[in-house]
Amino acid sequence: MEEKAVLTKKITKTALAKGLGISRQSLYYQKKQPLLDEEVKRQIEAVLSDHPAYGHKRIALELKLNKKRILRVMKKFGIKPYRPHARVLRKEEDKGPAAVENAINIYQRLCPIRPNVVWVSDFTYIKYRGKFI
Image (cartoon, rainbow, N blue to C red; front, side, top):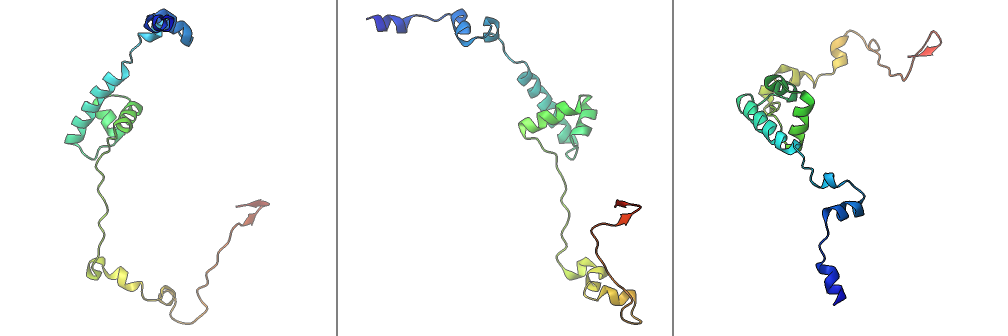
């Protein structure tokens, strides 16, 4: 019987706050940021519909808001601008004459007169005026 009475006893918010070691007022607190973030998200999507390649800096200029805020909201909701990808040329004739010349030895083109004219070297550091560059 006593166990049943303990379970049905109502815990007040004051007792709950004391038990958790926080103020009672914090139990009533509701964040305003998610509502503001939703509005900023709608504004960002509206700008991206007109200008799909705009990044966070241009969107911030368009909306007259802080770029850090725009970037935070874009990361939070996974919004990314459209980025065009580089075209990959697959046919040999599309690549142009530079691709064909790669087969020719570059050093022969530099000095075809005689051997041992073009030398190549590699270095890690150079000592200059007592310091390493």
